[in-house]
Length: 460
Image 1: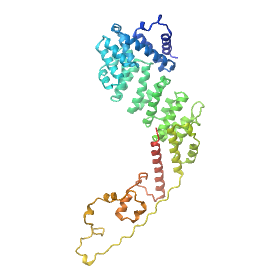
Image 2: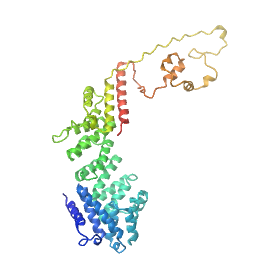
Image 3: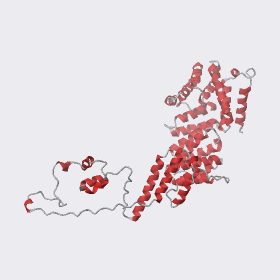
């Protein structure tokens, strides 16, 4: 256990077990309570989950003490800084506002208090406006670190580059603490959104090295998986393996399963195959071939391959009862596509030859008629010649049977052919369906389209 964790737990136990006469809560200064709270939070960030109840109790005690604080208490700058740190450590904004209203301190400290209250109350625009001019690096390190973290979080969307710089400042001012844990966790998401693969890999590596067992590590895992998918063209699988190798086998397996699933749904077959294989292989002699998720995701990446019979057999062995509903939908989609791949090709429709065009010679008495055009047919006159072709097709019923098409006039038949059912695949340009090779390519492309449609419809 790290020294900060030992100190934090010792102080927490002291506060919780000592009687009022010997160690009265009201006798403690606000900065002493807040410092104890920070030590406990730092031990939590390092993985000491047993300290979570102590954090809740200390927050309660600190809140009560700050509500009772008067102007005399806040004449000590350490107590007012403690009030601000308490607010940024998950404190009650009502308590911060009430205590700050009784304090007599410098304008910058009051401005920080105002910005923090806006931040905690869900008014980020006001918080940014108030806090933007204040440089965290000019403040005492305990306050500056928290302020840099808050400002970095507020500027994540509008000014991501500035946000990353502020998060670096927070880590510099408070290494090995909950502040650094939160700053690294946020940096991973911002770097992924910015497409900065190098920064993403560095922040992910540092987080896994230091804070993998933090109770907030699940949020890191969400950002990490999303970043791997978004940056799959810029991050090599070797780099990915380097980062995950620092995790314990169970966490590594879960990360690879999540990457494999997302990659399969997004059509990243190479990444899905790599991640599902890593999840199946396990580490240190631990294999996960019996995990239905690993079997499913590895099958999704090879469902259109030449080993389709093996894939179908693999899919058939998956225990559906051990899958979530979303994964059961993926399994159904994969089995449907596998069946489609081995289905015999449908017979191509036989086209009827067009009837011969009989050219009629003009009768002698029609010598005064208009001259025929280049097709040999006289021009069509009247109102119908000005009507768009679409109007003729719009008058016909959309439910008319296809069998009636050959009996339609030539123009009407062309219009009917242009009405394609929603479920019918669009024609593929440059390929002739009557050619055996082109027909095979058309079928393969349509199978891939079906996979994309079915996986896209499955819950993510």
